[in-house]
Length: 141
Ligand SMILES: [Zn+2]
Image 1: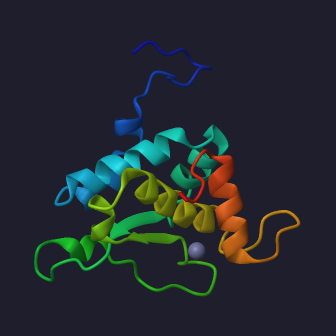
Image 2: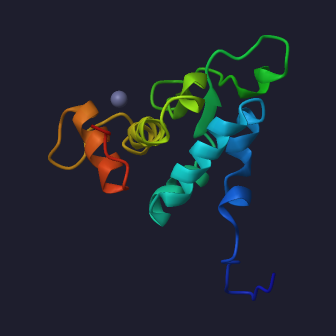
Image 3: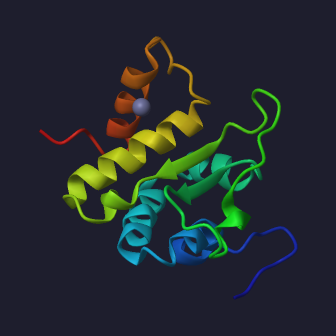
């Protein structure tokens, strides 16, 4: 990869860019792939918001104690300081791809919005749905 003093490398694949998030899904590769598909489709500014925030984490629900998942359990912090952890359910590996993509995007939208509203949309769920739809992941009918 060629870089100059003033230029960041631009040819970084999504898989390597988001590798730290995918580690939690090594035991659930189909879901990791679905997560990666959504992450890769997000606007660049949203990707940066996540990647630049060390508090932002994505993990898998129902981890098995004793198998290394301790690394992925966030230590609760002060309000507003530890609340950017997206938890995905293993069943998202098995439902329809469109529904899984929608749920993942919806949860990521909550994280991006810091669990708040979006513009004039005050309702948190409506805000997350609307933002997810703007990323191309509308709630399937
Ligand atoms: Zn929600």
